[in-house]
Length: 88
Image (cartoon, rainbow, N blue to C red; front, side, top):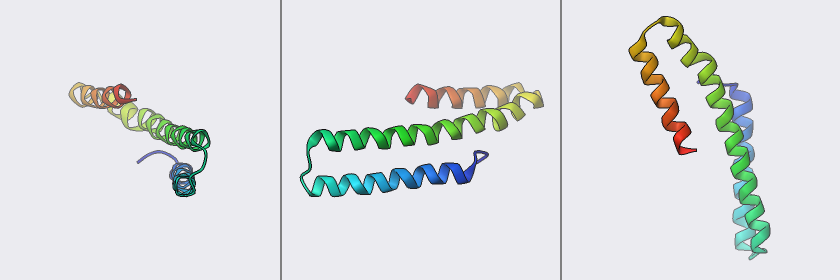
C-alpha cells in the first residue's frame, strides 16, 4: 500500500472506536436518530480512508504503470479502479 499508513491507520482506528460506541448505544437503547448520526459519522471516516488509499494508488501504482508503457497492465489497473469507483 502506497498511502500514508499512519493517516489511514488513524482513520480506521477512529472508525473502530466509533463502531464500539455505536454498539454501546444500541445496547443502551439510545435514541434511533442519535445512533443513525453516529453510523453516518463512521461512513464518512471510512470514505475518507478509502479516498486516501485510492488517491495514493492513482498517484503511485497507476502512474507507474502508465509510465511503463505497458498498455495491457495499464488497462488492467484502470479497470480495477473503475470497478472500485463503481461500488462507491
